[in-house]
Length: 193
Image: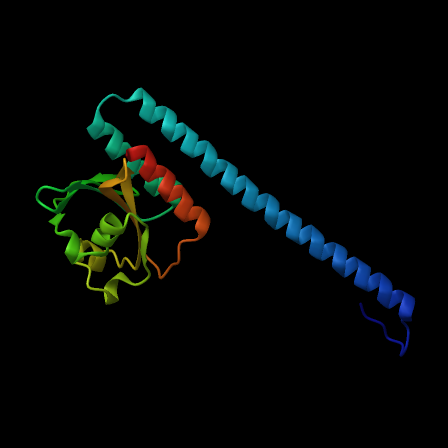
């Protein structure tokens, strides 16, 4: 509000201006909440669609590959990888690696002790790494450097209180996955289990 005359506004004008500012603030907050709810509704709808698609598939290989592909789209990440855990040999074997352009042929086997992925398997909990380039990750080294991947979220696939694999998500910036994203990753991993 502007005026060319000194003391052109009184206390009543100030009260009205404060009321308008408060109302504008509430409107902006509601717009932000509506946008967040629409985004969450879209994710939930996609998750239900993934669950229905999984129910239609009879081939385990296809189900697991679909989960990795859907993770890239739902989580808006650069890559997702689904590793299966071989408890007898104590190895994580890559089942599916997917990028924004689909399935990527890649062969990777690692010992759980050599990676944060193993912490997810052993602890049955999600593990988040915010800077892959500064950690001692021993998987996808070439891919991580080439694609400049920074952050990872590893979520164990748990069946009857035992880890059977890990779903890992990768983004190309320093990033902290929020609670909603972690919950969505957990739901995808549960579909795989």
